[in-house]
Image 1 (cartoon, one colour):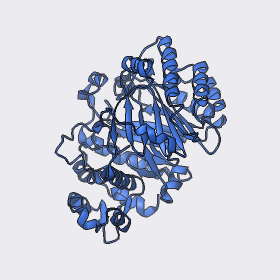
Image 2 (cartoon, one colour; image 1 turned 90 degrees about the horizontal axis):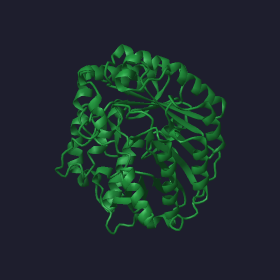
Image 3 (cartoon, rainbow, N blue to C red; image 1 turned 135 degrees about the vertical axis):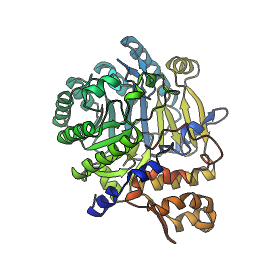
Length: 460
């Protein structure tokens, strides 16, 4: 991050952050998944035959213990047999795609959850080798194999297995190192344990390690968060995701166990964000937009500088594929024709796969306007800018006239110095990078169709 960018980032004020802190989509897709409807006669997977590159996402929902803050699709169990039999069904679902997908190379494989490392080494190997018999999986330096790991249960021996299978990226959920905070969210994990795993992962050849942090948790203070970030900086991850805790107990039952009386106030959370951004900038991390940071030599930062950064359901990426196949309960898939999502609950997922081979139950077919706005949203989220001439050519009309309602929504952000609007382009300023999702939402036709926005997490 340049000195000028740092200066403008530090120009953030509590008043500005509070003004744009309301509910807003995260735009890992457009339209967002909450818009999906019954699958009916939709067959967006037919476009898989034409893809040149492919991403695979595998959802492993199992965890040994319940983290109170968690909003993921998960099953808490210590009965390992459930995971092993689930893997049998997942591979059966994968076989459903065998005659539908071209022999396109898989350039991304991502294991999420839940806790993917809930699987033992034998089943991790069985799963990847099983997928290799269906999809064109060829590990190497030019592809990205990533896994989300729980540092409380990840064994160093499992790192060897993962590297043998081609995994080169490791993401670890840290959240906070303060023992009081960890106890309040039922996730006890020492910094020394994380340090040992990080060091071992580097020694074994993982070329990218990222940490997830959360602010706004019970008993957090500005000072305690700064101490966590100071320790994180010492451990030197390549990437950091700094999420705002989204308290949605009406949707996620586990969050009802959070002591809301102990959670920071809105003003305190603003102070936390400002302090965290300042600490990460001072340590040399660059902002990619929203809540993601990376070291200047990280490929995400290089892609951002070159205008090549992309975004998918796993967040920012440098390897956008033509299509995504999601396997497992709640997993989402994507082609140029649209989206489809699997049954959420494991029981319903298993039953659907055994009955039909597929667990898809809802989706969305993209029309011309969706594709246009999908392009606009992703340009704003990744390149932080729109070329008005390019978009005008796409809609065959002057940009300012075609998007007059959208520009009216953006007017307050222009006035606040978050967006720069001129004849040639619409550009998110360095100060506005923290509000990229707010800017993108101005172009969300579905969001502004009179529906309730409270279904989304708050920006802050």
